Image (cartoon, rainbow over all chains, first blue to last red):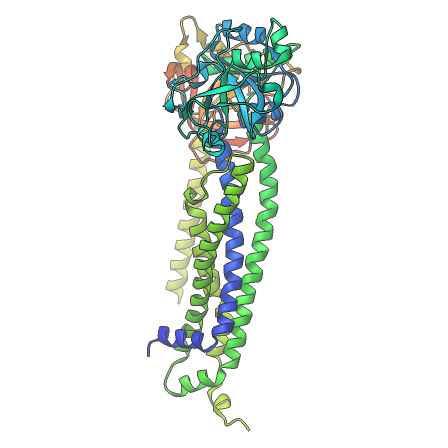
Length: 396
Length: 166
């Protein structure tokens, strides 16, 4: 019989103990894989889902709140700025594109985002461009002539069940201003997938205060300069102004990533301890198993198996247990990460596909097999040094 | 036995000589890499998007520039601006005036750069001077490609008229 066959027979001989040992390894691996994959998924989603515009201009207040609300729609918006601020930016020769954005209430949790067609216009510097897959864009209607047309993000359309031509509103006070679905977007980025886009005129008509003012309210303006080298000057000028602030979206994200780094360092420490405890558990289990079957090992030796063969058999057995636990753990961890991503996406809308995040599960798999095999060395050495004569003696 | 000892001594000698040579080569390479300042960049600008011949002579060479990171591009910092003034320095110092204040830096994707808005960074890479139009980032005058970025502890930014060497 081959060494692999003997190792498998040893495993079958203590099926329950082996199963429990592999299960403990699998749970540890699943925890590590799910944690690492989800943490990377959240970070990747923020990087991929950020805007292509370089500055977000809004009211004075928290830059993080401004970017999180306007770009990712994860926070409540800051107070409004005036449309005259946008007009000033539009006339600035340093600015290539300025896109006004006004965040409104929501329909069944999907926020109204009022803007112009410039928000969707293709440009060489845009990584992805949103496209209407059904219907058409809303009209860029002038103030005072609202069309109350809405274009739904892919996720908003799917979750609300709204279709082309449907009229909808939420709240009694909005019954006088129902919106009509004229277009549905294809899937793009997280935040835009969950938005209901309308024209600024429609937004202003739906708001009692906006109807009464001539200098209409906006939440923010997205800015793309003609030259990146103008950005520091623009940034400072807008921050020194009395009524606006300018925020670099990447500065906000990098600040959040710096905080996440600290949390991830702590998590890595905890996961390392989990890995050590799991490896020790495997070693103890194998040591006990080796000690319990010292008579079989002595018999194998008496039948001609050399010390190196015994060592290889025990290491092989431990490696098989670790591999079974690692494979089960990686599959379980991926499933856990997928379920976690679905929950987070439902709440935040910004989690990257965990199954697309390549190498970490593979690295955990290989590391577990390696550590598991190494954990078998101590019991293997015990078996290697076993005194044949002593353990073949009749049990009295 | 004596022959073996002599052979070992020779091998040790060769290893030491190689280490010294490598160290000297690294030191010489570091000396060859010029450090450019924002003052020099600013002084080199000429009309019609031109720069001086001296500044152009650095094009294609590896240089070092120290400054603040302004994350004007994506959050993975594969592109950012290097500036004389921090992105958070809104109230502390004179305002940047435009192209002479910034270098366009392109770093390899996946390079891990720990961003701190208030720290000065040492950026090394292949330098380009002169007008260039990039589809994603527009017109630039100074660029560093394939950049390596590290914190420049104790560094200071030199203004016009100042020099990094005493």
